[in-house]
Image (tube, rainbow, N blue to C red):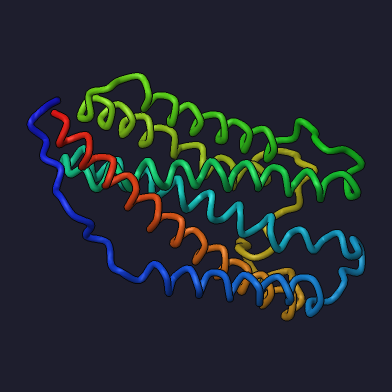
Length: 233
């Protein structure tokens, strides 16, 4: 173990119970809006409603891996263990969200495209992103030295984030079955009915709160694990 110090105590704000309540309540509201309030799509019918889960999962997966990147830079810059805790926590949540993102996309693709999976750019690049961050988590288990493990993982986390914009822009760079962006478009207003857009924004807000709650809990667990590791040295 190097001379890196691991601060004792939990510095996270004590808002987790309220954050959990807000996340649960907003998830219920978003679910009701997605299932009952938003209108049925004229082309896809009710199957499109899975997109109120699929799209927020995708956006939060992107966010999770960008946080891994920022926390990795923070670790390399300061050597503060808090940044390593944030990186591993966000990576684990990002892998979970990406896996669910792929599953939700497959559920939507079967009735829409006629297949559960096809080798089109968005799906392939997303699968690569999933595998890369699973590899990131596996890499962390290859060393018992805290500083060396954190540094190796940080370098990997900085490199791996390159795939995030590739996933998002893949539908613009190559011919794809996947629909083009409907909210963040290069020009014009979102290609969504106003009530659909509002439902999507509420869903995104709900899943962001869920991500924040998971992060708060997971970082606290990692900080406690770091503290136990420090006392054993």
